[in-house]
Amino acid sequence: MTTLLIVDDHPVVRSGLRAVLETASDFTVLGEAATGEEAVSLAQLLHPDVVLCDLRLGTGMDGIQTTAKLRNLDTAPAVLILTTFDRDAEILSAIEAGAAGYLLKDVAPEVIIDSIQRAAVGELILAPELASRVLQGMRSPLPKLTDREVQVLRMLSTGSTNKEIAAQLFVSEATVKTHLAHIFTKLDVDSRSRAIHLAQTTGLI
Image (cartoon, rainbow, N blue to C red):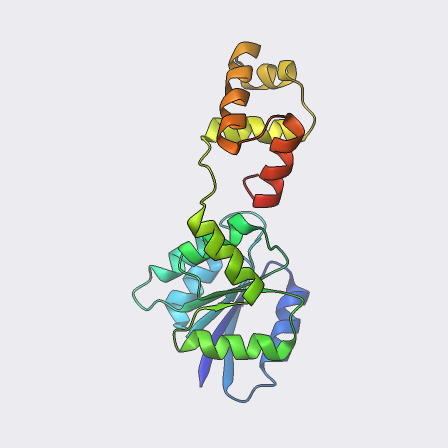
């Protein structure tokens, strides 16, 4: 019998997953959590074999941070990410945090059930197209931006001008231009629009 904990910030999603999983006679859902912090507390108390966890959990820890915390427990469960987001950076970060697999919410119920069974015995679960992207990401890791560069990039994505960014960060426009130059170099792009597009598609922002 495989024991489970469901982690999702939407009650309807949790109820739907429980209904699907309880149709499988060899599964027992021990509990549900709406936040990462609640998930870690319940896992310490209930000791599930597998935690089915969303990537975005509202306020507090996200699914990647939750995965890392769960995997560091003395009785660490396997963690299977189930989400609507498939950006390369998030997939790679989840696997690096210790996730046993990464599934999208549009997969068939039988795929979820099969993946939980495989995760429980220590297998890594990734759809072929996601696996190839993870492998590529490991071979060509995303550039590391500083916290301030990420901050500038986020402001850039909202349409803020250099002057507006400078005002919000309490720095000079020259400093903003320097940050942009570093960002363009690291991302290997030559325009603001290309930087924003790359950052959004890869999950940097």
